[in-house]
Image (cartoon, rainbow, N blue to C red; front, side, top):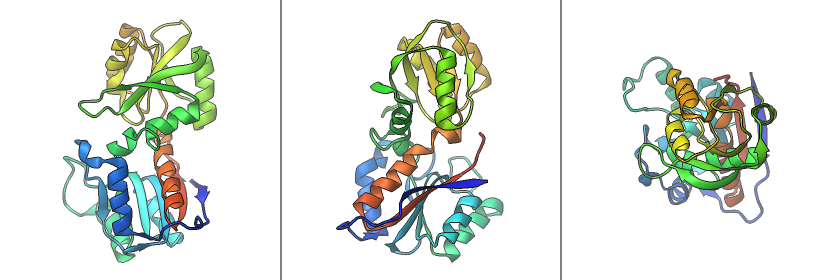
Length: 268
């Protein structure tokens, strides 16, 4: 199933016309992908037409998203999860061939930003999740190296585990998996969207009461209990819907384009 979040269907008066070249140049400056050692190429992954009038954003460049973009007569698709991941089969066969074929024969650009979109301090996944949940950002949480990806901060008021679970359920539309490390009210929290459960040890070392990410691994449960930190796995997809939608809305304000964020349902 799918539903559409309409961000901006009217071109902003006085905005610039957007070409692929101009868009990529702007995004390069805005997101600074060269700072990151990423798992996939950031920026343009599939070249399409030069003029961009209709932009579709989504979390992952799946067949369903590409089909929806075709229905919308999109000139470009901007996603968080694209193609050509480190270590994957490089052959253009199967699912990858079918997705690429649809983009190429319809002259649609595919633009991808992974870690740079997680980390951006206003439009990024972590910043947008904080805005949605009312979390107050403070320090950064380092990832596997520079620059920092995750954030840490505090709740607007102390939270119990059931209170925060209820807020996550209401905001994200799903109930998180919770591993309790303590029973005291939570004042401080670290968060990093997606598959960032491995940062829990850094969050605990910072003395945080809780840590939130998208996924959970087998060892995460043991670490949360032994380190005395509450862990919330709120869904990879659910936590990463907001950065790319915010980025698309930002581009629609900057340039003379139509933009829609399309959310392809994913329970993971």
